Length: 434
Ligand code: NDP
Image (cartoon, rainbow, N blue to C red; front, side):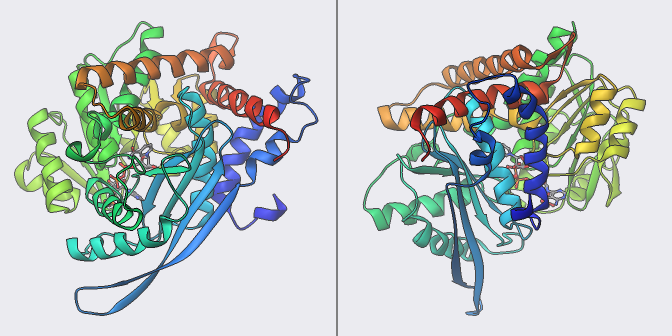
């Protein structure tokens, strides 16, 4: 803790894992006294680098690039790249740490990493984004590789950015390999990868609900965010019979009491992915909806809540409101969107709560499937990938139950942390103190 006092998000993520794994370690001789958690919290390697780039007016800018290679005990480092002005060492270390446990839960051989830059893609032209991505990759390329570290997208890094990054890697290395995931379909990408995090979050929630004899059918679903994860969580929730009534961005949220139908969602995708404008533009086409500026959607009564925007976007007061309004299930699509106090509130209220490291693992799992397809030089069908994704999410759900049962109430946080820990810890013990 003393070493990382200036890294609040990282400490928050570590604290949450420590709370549940330390008692487990104490009860198991093979882990006890080996300082295994102490070894896990220190990144194997943390790289920062200069990213200079030229804007459309010819002015030179400098951003900071990062890659945190957290843990490679069970496979090459794997985890997304985030481009957002708030990116710093604390945010990326928290994300990389979470990624280690998440990747372990998928059962695929992937270690944990995360990276990105404080570059803000908002308001930049395509050419500026391209020049930035090329500069970023001209340095990152020496630290990654298909058997070393395989980055993917995250906030601010979608198909466009992955394309520019891949192009520069290929040029410098003179090789066409699966060094990034989230690639376009015609150049090594996997079907279902864009959908995977959102779909996976809904599959996970579905498993939780099924255990209680419930389903999405007829349920009101509140979703935050309107990016990659939120869009496909909304799509799958609707396909399963739910009625999605909110979406948001960092400016506010829209509330459509009639439900965001597939046609309306297609319009959101157009606004966000092609026009790249604010979510309130939705009202221009659908004026019956409401827009609430600078607010989060947790005040809207719902049965199921899916936070899919960013870390710490749902606080203890939001959690209280959700419970008071009868919400029965919260599944995190984003990474650590609920504050620790909010999580305690969900547990006290005994509602179904899934932490991101379990419920949003579908994205990285499908990235793992993309790596497999790249290695085999084949492409699986949409149904094949979706079936595997569904199977992986069910498996993660069942692992959480195995380790998280507290007299009938499933503490999915505890279950995910311990199940993720065991596999990585076993590998680290087998490999010795390295
Ligand atoms: P996108 O960039 O596609 O979308 C992010 C969304 O969150 C946007 O609507 C954005 O609004 C909103 N947002 C970002 N920062 C803030 C903020 N500070 N306050 C309020 N809203 C904010 O990213 P993704 O959908 O890919 O990622 C969303 C979350 O899911 C992140 O936590 C990410 O780590 C996590 N995740 C993503 C995976 C993936 O496969 N993409 C995999 C696993 C987890 P605005 O446009 O206004 O910034």
